[in-house]
Image (cartoon, rainbow, N blue to C red; front, side, top):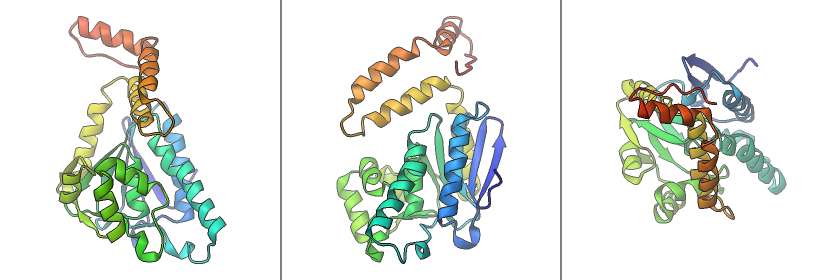
Length: 260
């Protein structure tokens, strides 16, 4: 598929998914969300892709929110359908993906942009980045998982403060709250994202997928996270990667995992 709003770049086993709407501060419109669904679904299925880095073009914005013009004339049913479709096809797809996804937040991550970053497994930020969920200033609330994921990441009280005040926070504050794991100068952001992902990609791919699945289970209502962990732990014993990992450990060499 030829994308109109995304750039896809492959660097060895890392795939970059870059939102390319710089003139609109990389805002998420329907077409961009549809392309993100296609891009991530393809990346998760592609055996040549080990992990993904998502970022935005330009120095100003990762994603500065959703395209509000598309919301203006929606009613209750259409608004509900919009949130459900976006959550299922993009945000939950990323969160539940079988490969690690790092959000490299290079500028404003507001509204749906912060929700997109929060759906990723790891977030790192530029010193110039600012983050927030300003939906209440429009008479709305976050609709792409923001009320749930922000509270999971930084705690209920601080999440409610951010959502109810609609205030933006700096990258340093986001690091203090646990919303991002590292803050770097702008020119180092993607270099450090690659270094982090390359370290992860030295590990067993099936074990990475099992770990993501197990951690997510603990935050899913009605699911026994401990039970999922036990089941995933057991499944790992049936993989060739487990046998390779143990052999490499005993032989004091680096493991050569194949995702089998």
